[in-house]
Length: 296
Image 1 (spheres, rainbow, N blue to C red):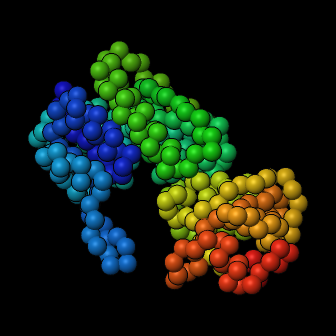
Image 2: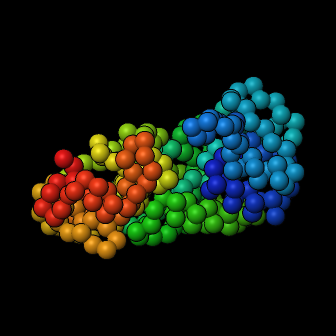
């Protein structure tokens, strides 16, 4: 079976690796190298790194319009996983295009399904093998598997769902002719927008909301207030009523802060332009004590 693969992040690497061990990979499509860090060093995607290490042909177009390469390859399937570009009709018509989308479609079509599941407090999320059409994650469902969200971060779920998708795609391709596609119910569809840096801004109104943002926005953009970025924290409770930002307790490993509803423990924080420090070191440097407000 001959496969063209399209994907970019680490989630997609696990799927590509599984395909590479089971089928013939004709070529790999991924996003172009992007500048990373303060020095803006051009960095390849994880998928490109994998492809080069495994001697696979790699293409990094900025658009798939008028792409004649795939047609000449004559693939049996085109497999897509968090690629970052929509496939035009001329590519969709070449071979069955299967997308491994990290949600239980039709829920969370779009760019950030895993983060959306955490932010909304969903009990379950999963992976859906979908037969692609010209819409945004609107195609017929082929196979799906689910997992509990629990207290996982987006990093945890990307890792777990990547493993599930790696197994799911092999089953989907081997049984493709036996699977009866299921149309999505558009009435039940929800959308997950692309994440922006400003989404990580928090207020101390609700501890549960802070915790969900903290787990959803790892590793980027993280969460932050006007004073500092919160690099490590714990949810203490979600029901208590407190003064916003009040230091309620100083523990061995952190500082418990009041929210209008609930409490959180700050463990590691980072002031803009400075290195990460323990929350205790921060309040000691500011000469703050129990009863003071960490946001002043």
